[in-house]
Length: 112
Image (cartoon, rainbow, N blue to C red):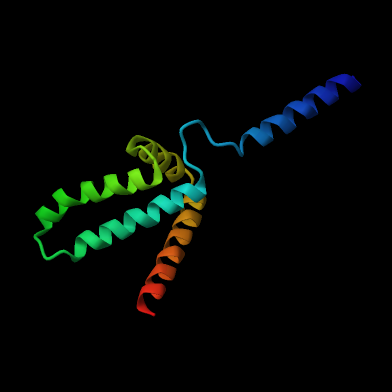
């Protein structure tokens, strides 16, 4: 009986620890925030160009590819990670709060 309790307790502990691990091919929250910051900077940059909206929509994917190159992240991994994190609203809110904070810091540094 004592061995059974130890085995069950060990199994429970191992399962609870494994929940904190990310599935393979998913970016960490920190890396995801870094990429999101640069994605939003790229979107902002393209939106400032004096060109028509249709042209900016054609131009943006090139900037997006540069962000993925900068971070050595394939676009498929980014999209898979985004889909993974979007399943958890609290995590996504936390990541976007960090993204917005980072963008504010960058904006403040530029304006000084």
